[in-house]
Image 1: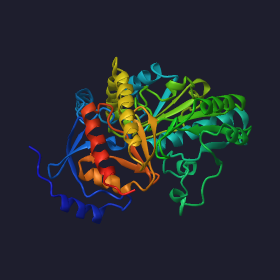
Image 2: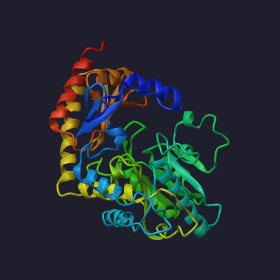
Image 3: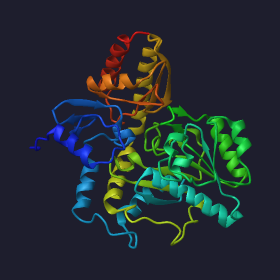
Image 4: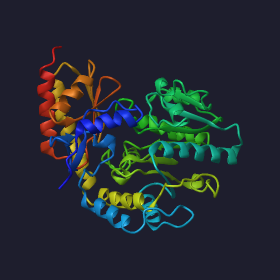
Length: 402
């Protein structure tokens, strides 16, 4: 039996001892199963956020839980001065099922992106010299909050007050091939983009734009980096989002859902990018630890089970159709877009109130860029749960005066 938790006490203690970096909801979750979270007062919520695209297998996957418990009962940490069997097994599994030749493990997505930029610049330096160092990023992007990654994230607010900023980062409009051609050149060490922009408003990259990025990377011998931290790990209906386009990057970054909730990040690379790092080039204390990589291996194996990704595509088609039907009868909705189970519903007005009212109804959704409702549920979400959420949203939007 779980010990009762005093919600107000937790909130009061949090206010006293935690830095005020998040606008938290006044809710304390104490348990979860499948796509459901349970708060300290016993209320159930259907989760269409998945911990921000993390719990792709939901909250009660037995294989992942078993792998974590088994590893916790043996070794949690040793350091990367020694070989770590679960780390090796996860690296092999990821490389065998992707374009990549080698992997490096970190603790988060921001670390993975920072490492990917280091890798691209190091390879450019070794091959072409120090002048080839510029990173081309996309408007609307989000790559993290470290000093480097926030400077390739298109949000000036994130950078305010943290100067002086590292140089060598430029932005170009997403999905604009002609603009991309104008900024990529001999000085470029890498082009970094998200195959599906998440925080930027749920915008998939076009096939033509990805092709242009690949052609320019080849022409100028720079790295093409795909940030699949949010859109990877089955989220798009493919194991990796790049697979739908059949356009391979040189480097890919992963995190979030890679271990279904345990902190982990990864850089996957091919060719000479895979062999650029040598002892002393890069490192981490906790990255690739036995516990996180054991959970990661179990997670990847579950995602790769025969037919699983097909069900994600089917649920995506079903949910998108439901949202399009809602749009057809609701003037508040401007557009429905996205791929897989990373879907966005753009409103003609602010969406924050809708998020709060859906939460009161027992559905966790998210709003990004002020007007875009974002749906990123566990990939195991049921059709009945999709129906219930869409019904609640339909009722709620019907109450809003246009």
